[in-house]
Length: 264
Length: 225
Image 1 (cartoon, chains in turn cyan, green):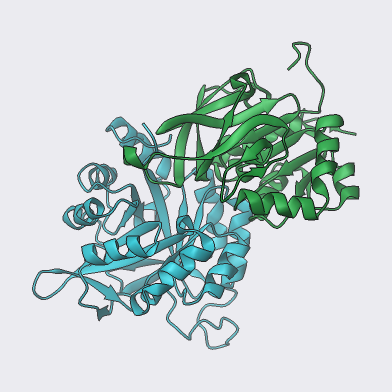
Image 2: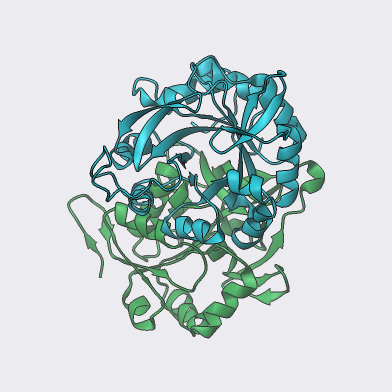
């Protein structure tokens, strides 16, 4: 029967605080990520993914003109979370060098995601997986349908079209040594309209490595369809788990009842 | 000397071996979250004073054995664990190292405490990827110390590995997992215990297993287990 399908909460961090995102543009602050850890930990989630979407060069939390005071640093966040989370932890965002990866794994991350850095220099995927092992390196791919209605990979936090086809890029990432693909639909992000099943399926069927689908989850049945019809190995969701009445425990029960091989 | 507190748990001094292989911090965090004292060390004086020894490990078998040799820990740990019967828990690579021999990169002698060989998964022809990464079911022997009192015979744990241990004496295997082939997910021989999966990454089931290890005070049961 082999490996379980996974349900993974995704938490977005901006300037050290949790945010809710919609279409990669609207960001609403939700609070201190360290305070939220107990909640996710108590749910016994399969994994946790943290993505740092802070804009480049604006990360100095010691500046007085920052609106939010007392936000933790990235190092503090990773250290405190690892103390309380006994499940695989992934930290992504702003990873440019091997040193960035080393820093996060030393503090407690099991895996990292890379997006823009890999687009700018695909060889970085190989360098990273040679040093840390492919199981540590997740290639994050953000996708939007362009003006011609064709799926296109976007870099720079969803702002820069790359001209790349997500299926081809995912296959290349696999060949270069990525252990998993984190596939994000910019169009569906925050809409709760459901995953982009067509996109997820196209990518999942093209690669042998696990695909984690993200973007659009609104109801528990979305998790079932992205795995059954989308062929994803894991369903990830950000916004939906911000509401405590929709916990991963309830979601997994639903998935299990609907024939998905999840850990319960 | 272990103390039984009001909460009915054994409390001791747990030493997590520091031999440069992988991230021991998660293991330390897990042990400490149970309210136990844990130290990360390769000093013989500290390992000798510990009531329990955990050998974690991520990385390659030959490198791990070379590191243990350089630290003078091969004979020392053998004395502590095999002769003095100190409770020992090997995790992931730490499980594989107790075997007689490993075949990763080149044939290397392991600690030799268990008659077993460490082999690579050959399951690609079944459409399965190596390494084996993710949550998988383990059929547990509820008579074993590692699984004493568990409510469900099948538990799910988190795995990350390309090699597995093939034990000569199947009775020493107390947990079985399937990944293309049936392999030993957990083993136990008196005070020597080990898991191929990462209990420190397996949520409550994993923490409970570590708890059961800490609760074992080294006494041999009347059934000789």
